[in-house]
View 1 (cartoon, rainbow, N blue to C red):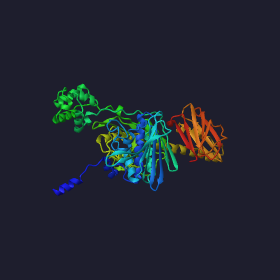
View 2: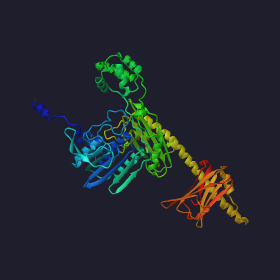
View 3: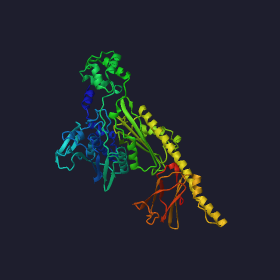
View 4: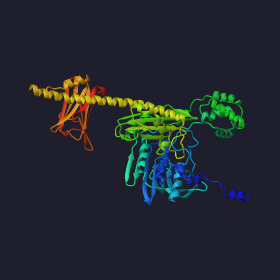
Length: 600
């Protein structure tokens, strides 16, 4: 008994702040290196959510500066609606405090842990309070707070609060200082780059020590903010149902109709009948056994899927392509958005894209970009269902080399949007293996794989055709020259022979003796205006005929001629230069043209 008394004296409850103080790795603060990325990620997520709720185009400023030995100051400033002064201490100084956890809609942040966990990490490593400046409108004063968290009670500790003269009409600015390193600088820039890809409506300005970076928006359209929906009967659990009926004084039928998504009077009556309950019985008067019967009936009755068009905010195929084109220069990009689906009553949608060639690395594994609710997943790639799905697809059937993951100049993007993303941990780095989600990921990647296979096949065929055309255009003139020497007669123009062999619009570029010649022979049967593009280091100031348009960027001159070449005739341009560069013709279908650089 004496021992039991002693043990009892040692027992006490702990606050959630105290728990995470000793288990900060669960929130993504497992190392000083990762702490910077996690802090910026949480602050940026909050900023983007706030701007979208206020229906403004996000303009986010991020600053990272070293202020002392291993101490870094992180500043994230947005142009969102701001936070009222009374709520600022709780938003930043209390774990598990927020407005999104109770709403069934797609959001980046949900539990109210992220940014307050960064405040906790700062006071643990540097002892410095977090500085928050917020303003809700041009007519309202800005307020400046210095905040920490009382570990024992998980309550905000306001070090100081005062009005502040701020030039922003509305928005929030967070300044956090903690012990860290910048060894993950590359990873940090990757996070911001990937975030700009899936948030094409946002602009990010970054100051990293003495360097500046800007990730511009490619869309001027404010995205529609998802609308919260009611819980779905197929996703409800007993404890949640018990809590809901306890807070209701409605009759059973009215309770089901008004508290659950896609439940009408007829469906509510069917649920009641299956459970053996009258529709007029009071919901809060049901016994435990009756509640269990009701829950079973709710799960058994067929109910349409939740209205995903309201609660989800997919990026869209066009904006995914534009976002990728902005950050990656590739020869091929295709995107797909799958129809919405449901797991355990939670609506979700899978989007994906595949890029190939261009400036992607030729060697090594494909670049895999994983996203959940428009947020990049930067860590725990091997533990993520997205990675497993990509590895389980037979990419060799799509003409892509594979060693577990695809190999070569390939980029794969997968985005899962859901009202409740099933993360494997609180750090939100990997998606759990949910069969319904995995099925949608595999289907969308297989669809994109078929399109990529067609592109690779067409590219190989075009390369063979170009090789043949180059051989024809190079060898036939040489044969004609040798024959003319033997028979001692003038060299015959072989262009008609080349045209008859290929039956295309043939563009040729060659350089000899300091002169560049461009020829356009029309044996395609096409009649219409053609634009000839020649991009090289040659300004072509003496071109005959003169180019219709000339521009210069970084020492490269783009010359454009707009011409109409009658059938079976040849157009020529000549200028002084060294040749090289790129030749292209536009205005005619790719299948009816052939471009050959004889100097290659």
